[in-house]
Image (tube, one colour):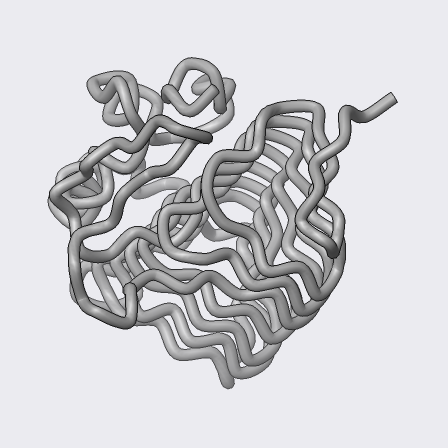
Length: 219
């Protein structure tokens, strides 16, 4: 339920070759910066413009003047970076993605058509194809005790040896408004998280996480 091959259609990202190296998606978080620097240097200059050091933007992308973009960052075809977005980098924002008003993203891979459109914080995370976070939904990427993240799936616990992991959202995941995704949350593809929910652990694919913490199968 939480392996890279189970969560994503890797044909829907420029990071296909990079991510396919890793059995578990959180293993890819440490190398995102180096990966973007390598990929950026190879991009077609007829399609991408290097706006400043280590920032490559597709010529069809729409980037508001009020947005701040730090490198290393790649912004793909027809992507939208809206008013007052803060792209801290490193960030791979793929084709047709949306980073909305007053959003902050950092150390993130966004697959094609993924969206964080309103007041979202997304850090140390991977968002699959057509994953969507509702207004005010955020990731929490650091435990209060600053210890390494443990991925929890029922009785199973996976030691990651990584201090910062936000959320891993599979393809077609919908996260409701003002939900909080606790450190190391994994949401399987085609699943929903109810608004205002505090999510944690592994939520299997084709499921709904409700406000009281119960998980039901999608019909």
